[in-house]
Image 1 (cartoon, rainbow, N blue to C red):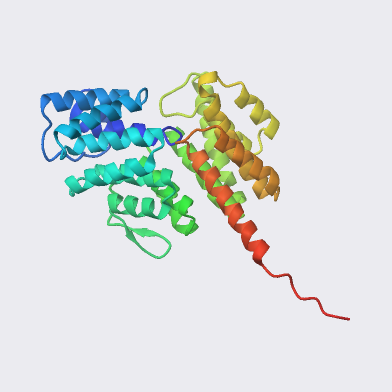
Image 2 (cartoon, one colour):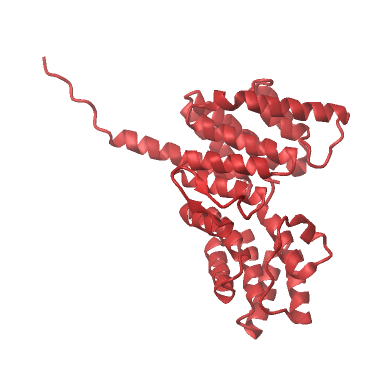
Length: 343
């Protein structure tokens, strides 16, 4: 799940719980969902469901349908919500944020808009705003270097994971980010999700020169996943890592070389190749950065961006890494040269 489009997950969880019912959507939501303050009419409900189905194939038509609903009823909260999702899919993050804010204003008690607004703020580069939205949604009180909450966060492991990624993109507090990532790791239900969370933790440690610290734990997870895969004779099992999940870890723990890793990725099916390359370029870039090869690291991070995998976590982290490197280079350029003593 973390490497997929979380917005798609939210479409299913929220719209399914509100409107679609038997689409098995509510089974995916791991907590009770808010109820709309006013039930939609049968016509409105049909239009919302139709637009929802169009989100991955025809965003423009979905937006046009919501425009019609809002022309007839400017206070129809769900139309703003769905139009925000469609605009987000198009990359119109400011328009999407405007719509989700209208949705939130019409239903101040509802929490679903907070989750989507947090993700839209991440896409728009408003990382501190995204962090605040996640904190409000998850019911977090911020402490020194960690987050305090009475018991567990109110969100799912996936949502906590994306909060940790928002913290990573904000780049202000790696300790809080790692603690949050660890909490997500323990709440994620599936082994393949846990493995990806471990990959992200490896990167956060690596950014601070502590990647060797997590390497034994990561190797144990990779070995466990490989054993389960061998036991299933290579058959994919729901919630368990498969070959494409494990190749990242095998590269990070030095079981395969960079060339072997890229060779495996380039053999991926056409429909998953761009996603696999985005992952590979990010992790190779991270290792190049650790080795002090900044120019090579920059090249791989830029390649990750060029895959255009807009919602991929690795693309988000590649953009953050490039920004971090740019900031470091600018600071170094401004630093005055040490004065030399005259003979």
